[in-house]
Length: 125
Image 1 (cartoon, rainbow, N blue to C red):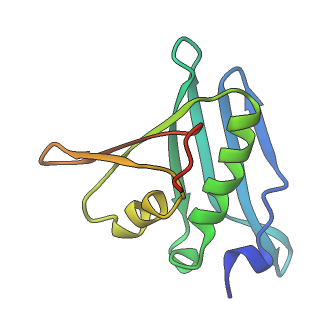
Image 2 (tube, rainbow, N blue to C red):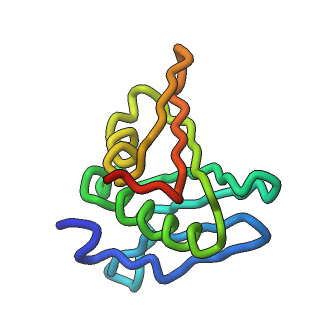
């Protein structure tokens, strides 16, 4: 089952440059949060650090991609210009989510962690 067929990011909150979106799916006793995506905006640069957490059983089912697309839409509407993130080398699925986002992703490796940056105003052609 893919995330886009069952997940809903209906719940999100934004407080002064911080946005958090929950990935929820139907559960036995109501909605179940299976993922969280968030960004923290630096208002001086209009750049935001993004972070995700996805329950193990929902990894590699499109949940990270689904939530990244969702928070990207919100961020662009709110004037955010750039996303950046730190990703461990062992987290290949998250690296793939960024590289398949449709944006020109810049990646640097410092020997311990990948630094990911991309401009939200420039989609790849």
